[in-house]
Length: 167
Image (cartoon, rainbow, N blue to C red; front, side, top):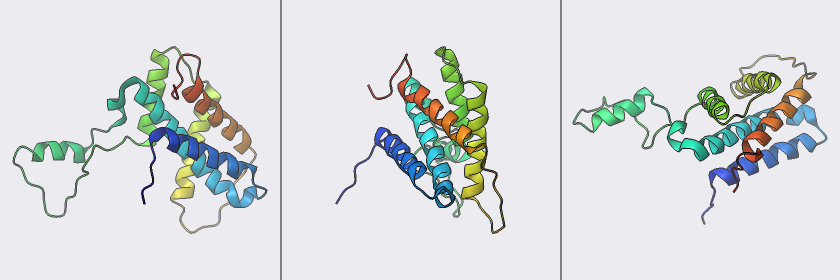
């Protein structure tokens, strides 16, 4: 049995799951998954956007990739070093920075409240993902605005006037 997927279906499925979690009746239980899912959706739509412009911009020039290239010229790795078989995708922050640059080049703009919300979403996602045992009281007052601003950003990337990543 095979499961087929691609970057477009991943982006849409992630967004669909996030919206499903938002519609659930228990936001206290689903909040973590809404944040993680929305973060994943934002990242996947940034990947789609960058791919439509220059897919090479998606990948990092990190040490492991550089080491792999240098090893091809007869150098050997230490026995405890493992390298990726393929280039590494940039992290969220680097993808976001690249996306903002490309949007600017194409005369599209992220409004400040979207910028702030994306940074807050990333911080929340990191806290939820790397959650150490502790008591944590989260003020949910700003969450609806953060979610709406991030969904607006996804809409800009996926269905803006100048380019539709699904064409």
